[in-house]
Amino acid sequence: MINLNHPDSEALLKVARLIDEAMGLGQKMTVVSSSSRMAILQECAPLLSELRRMNDQAFKGSAYIRKTIDEFETGIRAVSSLGHGKLQAEPIESLEACPHCGTPVARIGYRRPNGQTKVCLECSSLFMQAKEKLESFEGFGTCAI
Ligand SMILES: [Zn+2]
Image (cartoon, rainbow, N blue to C red; front, side, top):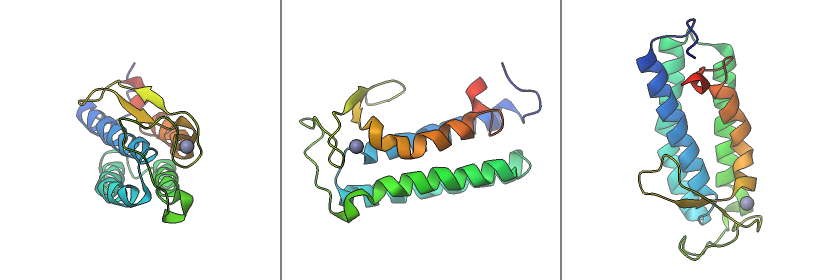
């Protein structure tokens, strides 16, 4: 069900893709070394900027969305700096436990062009709540897609 108070479906789909990409990068970060996390964080920056631009352009500059994008970014940045920049990680193929918290990694594969990948769900929780708020009807409303 699409909320009719929201802008056109093209804007919604674009926002949904941006959120998914940023989330995917955040998840990818949870299973790599600190130096790789820094590189991935750089990839996140333009996605978050674009989300902010979309909020201003197509969602009337919602204060709730603005605040929630900030939370999402704070969560992703928190993942990037876990272990004080000193985390080492095994290659993804052999990785069984999170390099930071030791939780067994989860295998996920949905919506990934490259197939299955591994993530630490525990560390991902640092940004997943904000991600869900962004998708809610109070946020961008992309949960309806
Ligand atoms: Zn972890």
